[in-house]
Length: 72
Image (cartoon, rainbow, N blue to C red; front, side, top):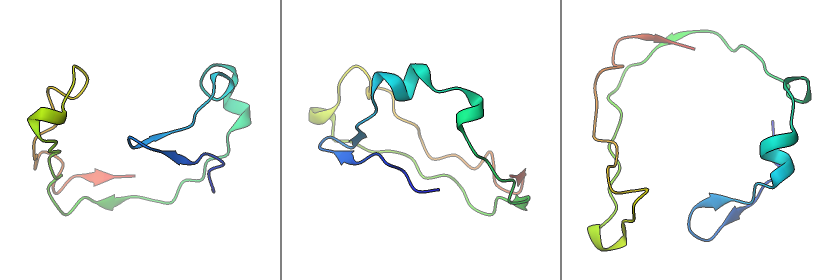
């Protein structure tokens, strides 16, 4: 499914009020693609401390908790 949203500076998307609040489940189309085993660890996030703010103060660390588990 192609998104009608575009990237904006700062790494976000240009979601509107209607995109976030007014959409209903019947507006969406989903397709189950099957299951597979997660084979790798998840990488952590890193933003230099001088560029962090209250939302990015505690970033996700690398984790292998999902490795070897079935995902869909």
